[in-house]
Length: 378
Image (cartoon, rainbow, N blue to C red):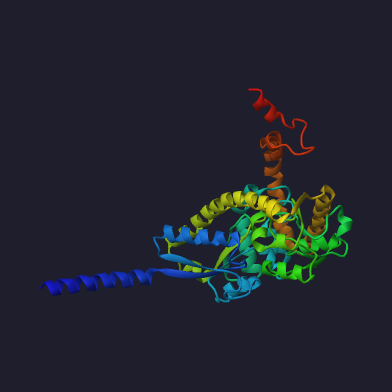
């Protein structure tokens, strides 16, 4: 009798185990990033969060660029069901349509928006619906997309020689992507598009003279301080860029309500968890670049930043005139920014105001050193 009872218990346990295994889903999601970068950490954080929220019933297998398909092929690979999902940034798809760049936070915000403003446009102003409609109807892709990692504001770039003005760009071969390539081509650069993993070897071989990647920790891990001496920051080309996470529509529809809710919550959680950690990593990385690698970190000349915004206005006007969808999306962004940006400018003090008070820089403020003097007088 005891043997029968034990056998029955084992059979029940085995049945539960098989049922649990049958209910567990695993999604293959590949990114456009090398495995060593912190942008890839965002996908890892999302994977861990979804696993916990679903009690292990939904797992995301985190794959780096090239593990199944090349970095720039993840969108099409998902559409063809080679993989279940992708983690990238939409301006990589401007070869399909220039409209794609508008969903990654185009130059200047756009229109002065910061990350929270831009997320407001996506979630409150109808931007996310436009994004999904663009992929599904304009590009004819069976995909669903969400905003992912806020990898910005980004540095202006890396150079082998110091910059003084826009005139220095003439003849420079520089790695640029998306519509940013059109901006800097207008300013005189000879632009080259390539994945991040190809920047260092290309610089070593003399294929490029300068490169834009991200800034801070991403650039340090990629090895850019080893091939470039001058690092200029900030930039206006990606002061507000946001990446993307997406799935094939059939994969999304095959998830139950709890799993779908976990994806959305996981995306929101990963945004905050990754970004807060990234800010400290960037600060440590800049310090290491200067002290360990001898990088000269310099402020981008204001006339270059202004010139880049003017060039972007030209690029946006040209595409708006030719592409009704581009115009529709861009005007939607302008309309939303016209409400929130002026109001926020009244309510939010300039970041540099208190920063310069406590951490003064040369020529930054007439109140330079005031905090230090006040502290010493107590």
